[in-house]
Image (cartoon, rainbow, N blue to C red; front, side, top):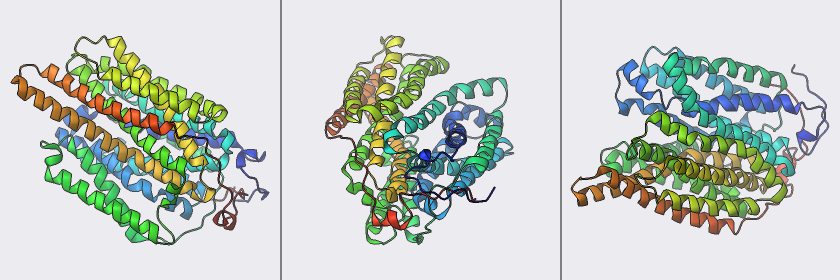
Amino acid sequence: MNQQVPTKKYEFLADDPSVKVLPIILSLIIGTFFAMMNETLLNIALTTLMGEFNITMTTVQWMTTGFMLVMGMIMPASALLLQWFTTRQIFLGTMIIFTVGTIICASAPSFSVLLVGRFLQAVGTGLLSPVIFNIFLLLFPPARRGTMLGLIGLVFMFAPAIGPTLSGVIVEYLSWRYLFIFVVPFMIVSILFAYKYLINISEVTKPKIDVFSIMLSTIGFGGLVYGFSSAGAAVDGFRTPSVYLTILIGTISIAAFAIRQLKIKQPLLDLSVFRYPMFRLAVIMYIIIIMSMLASEVILPMYMQGPLMISAASAGLLLLPGSLLNGLLSPVMGKLFDIFGPRKLIIPATILLSATMLIFSQFNTNTPQWLITVGYMMLMVSVSAIMMPTQTNALNGLPKSLYTHGTAVITTLQPVAGAIGVSVFIGLLSSRQTKLLQESGGANPADAFIGGMKYVYLFGLAFAIISFLISLFMRRAVPEPVTEQDAASNQPGIVVDNKL
C-alpha cells in the first residue's frame, strides 16, 4: 500500500494512464457533498434544538455563526497546511476531523458538546474547499479544468440546496440527531476510497511557520466574520460596541497581516497572486456574486414569510428550483468555459444579474409567486455562469507554485464576503424599513418592509452594474510559464506516489 508507483513525470496526472482518476474523483465528491450539505442541514432544526436544550435564539445561532467564524479563521492557513502535509494526509485528516465532529454532534448530551462537534465540522469543511481545488488544479490541464471544476461546483451548489429540504423531513419524522447519524457512513466510505486510491500529487516543502502571521490572520478574518455576522442579531446593529469594535480590530489585523505577508520571505498567504490581472478581477467579481446570492437567500424568505404571508415550507419550495438549477448548470458552464472562454459567459451573465436585481426591486405585496421563482432562477443562472468560470480563469493564470495560495485566497473570501454581504444588505433593509415605519406612524409594516427591500435591491443593482463593467475587461487567462520555484519543487513534472 505504501510502495511508490512508477516515477515517470507527467505535466498533469490525468494524463498518466497508471493513475486511477475516477476513484480519486469519487472519494473527493462523496466527502465534499456531505460536508457542503452540512452547512445548511441545521437551518431548519434550530428551533428544535432550542426546545431540546432549553436555549435562546441568540445562543442557538452559534451553530451557524460559530461555524462561519471557524471556517473564516481556518481557511487562510490552508496554503501553509498544503505545503506541510501530503495530499493524502491533508485530505484524510480533513475527513477524519469532520467525521469525529459529526459523531460528537450525533451523541451530544448538551448544547456545549454539540457546539464543540459543530466547530470540528467547520474545521474539516473550511480546509476541504482549498484542498479539493488544489487537487483538481494539479490533476487536470487548463483546457479541461472548466469541466472538472464545474463538476465540483455542482456539488458545492447542489448539496447546500437540498440541505434544508432533507433536514425538514428528517427532523419531522425521526430526530435531529439523525441529521448527523446518516452522514457518518458516507464519510467513512469517502475516507476508505481516499485511503486506497488517493495519491500524493504535491510536494511537501515545509516552509517556515510564522506564528505572528497566523495570529493576525485568525484575529482579522475571525473578527470580520464574527462582527458582520453578529450585526444582524444585535439590537443596535452596527452601533453595538461588540460589533463595531470587533470589525475594527479585524480590519486592523488584516491590514497588518497583509503588510507582513509582503515583507517576509515565506508568507502564510502569498499576496503576489494579486499581481495577476485576471485574479484581481475575479476576486472583485467573486465578492459581488457571493454577496448578491447569500443576501438574497436571506431576504427573499423574509419577504415571502412576512408581507406575502407564505409558510416557511412553501417559501423553501419556491426557491428550490433556482437552487437546483444552479447546481445542475455548474458542470455545463464549466464545459462552455473550456470551449468559449470567460467573456462569452460572464458578460451576458452580469447583464442577467443586473436585470434580476431590477426585477427584485419591483416586488410588492401583489407579486405572483411564480415571478419570485422565476426571478430566483434568473439569479442562480447568473451565479452559475459567473462563479465557477471566474474562479477557474483566475487560477488558470497563476504559476503552479501559487496554486495553494490562490485557492486559499478565494475560499477565504466566501465566509467573509457572505458575512459582510448579508449584514450590509440586512442593515440597509432594516434602516430603511425603520425610517418608513416612523414616517407612517407604524401603520403598515408590510409596506415598510417592501420599501426597505426595494432600496436594498437598487443597491444590489449598482453592484451588478459594476460587475458588468468588470466583465468587459475579462479575457482567457494564459497559464504562467514555469518559475524557478516550480522547477525547484519538481514541477511541472510531478512524481506520483501513494505514501501516506
